[in-house]
Length: 458
Image 1: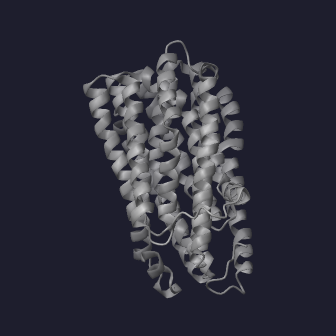
Image 2 (image 1 turned 120 degrees about the horizontal axis):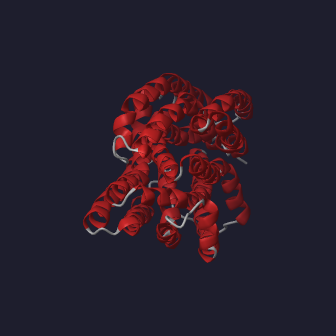
Image 3 (image 1 turned 180 degrees about the vertical axis):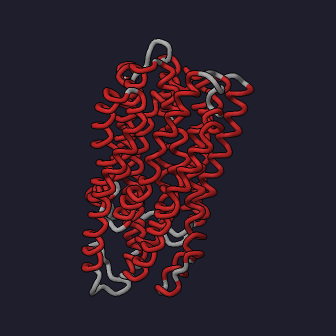
């Protein structure tokens, strides 16, 4: 198994091997981004920026559903990788099974509640008479498709925990390609508008979910569902460990509402469309950070489960070097490519294009420091320290961001709206550094007397 070849001994850990293991996960993150970006491009080009604004208004609902799935997927996936590293295959399978059952239950209840009060919910999210019809259509498609949404996330993360990031990439790539083709047919050719974009996305997720189910039925390596002995407290424990990702998605849902309402007050519907464009492009650029961090997380979890702290230290050194070099290059790319990137969504010279161009170059300053914060949160989750991971995510994605979103636009207008995220990321860096240092000492102390195979998470 590739993971075992990387982690057998510290001297066998080489950056080239690590990159080879991480690359499929980064590409997976990239294709996940395509689910939303391609919808945005087709809707903007074939329907208009008001329809694009409608999709952005609905996205807090998507964030909530995805957040529920990610809490169990990331938290449970980390614990499963730790269990596999410790040689506890049955425990890993039971963690997978309880996460699957509880995710479907919780997300189903959430989707049912949102469907019952959808008009009021959309009005709260910022829907106007101009966008309400499209908002309702797009929201209902996601609520109906919730099993595919959560199933795809669960399968992807647990496939990665099983040491098969390449197949995880296939799962995401198949769904992403299907989404692109269906967007072309349903939106561009058949003029189905927001309905077509929603159907294209959900059908792509259904394909990804189906491939994930096939993996665990036929192709699994070590991880297989174990239905006997499942306990609710184990599922809760997994969800708590993945709380960081859930907090992130819920924070995005709330801050998107604030972004949209502030932009609407400052510049009308054009402002909401500009926010939508910047959010789409953010996924594309910051996806590099998420892809690297999620790619290396199973290696950290597996090494931690083995008690191989020297392996973990070496992987962390590679990571800190990466996050010292990548951010300035990424911001430079974002700054220079901004006119071309924004023109994929809005016609050059329009008010929306101008707002999004200026906004992207200011908002993108956050890319210089976001990488370390993202890696810190995912690193802590991979070691089973999800409660500390949630602190980092809560600061960068919600508490500080909300403060700056409410304050800066009053001082600097629309520029203050774009600068809220960079300032939140910069202040969070201090917490990330402190938590990295303290948890590193704690993790290394825990493992001083652990030998490979010991259950370090008990």
